Amino acid sequence: MLLDVRKLALGDKKEFDFNTELSVGGVPCSTHTSGSVIFTEEGYIVKGKIEAVLNLKCDRCLESFSKNIVCALDEVYSNDINENSEENTADAKNEDKDYRSFEDKALDIDAAVKDAVMLEMPLKALCSDDCRGLCFKCGQNLNKGECGCDRAYSNPAFEGLMDLFKD
Ligand SMILES: [Zn+2]
Ligand SMILES: [Zn+2]
Image 1 (tube, helix red, strand yellow):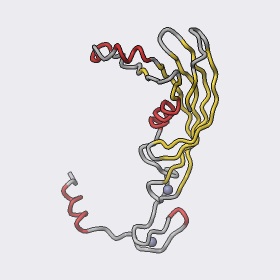
Image 2 (cartoon, helix red, strand yellow):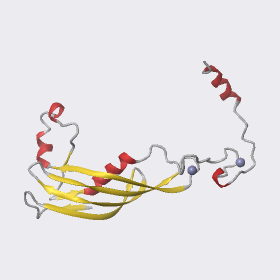
Image 3 (cartoon, protein in one colour):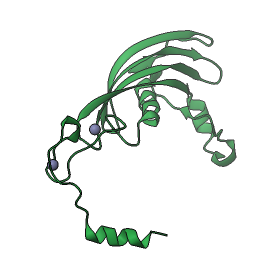
Image 4 (cartoon, protein in one colour):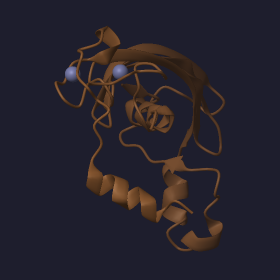
């Protein structure tokens, strides 16, 4: 969502609270974001809380599942800073502060929400830590029951490779 800050004078604060459906790295997310923006000399300081439901697909069993996350929204929007920093990007750029630019007096909060959720995205999507995955022989979802296949089979070529790493 775009947060209109046209009416904000220096020192003013504006609260916001909204729901958005976003796609974060290809994962559909329902997000609820609440917080406030304060117009200061530094820029528009946005702080808030993001609650998101990620609609993931398990890497092991391929079933869909959802995961709830909560993370912070903490951004400073300023166009002045971005212009100045072009001259001396190396040392002037404050490492822990990234300024976002904006257009037409509207802050693109969605982009900030996406970035914050992206950082919380699990590297491995597992429906549960002990997900048993799919049978490599018949493809049955082993969380739903045994298929009866003999999975003791191991690849001789792979065994030979393992010998190389034994010590
Ligand atoms: Zn799974
Ligand atoms: Zn099987």
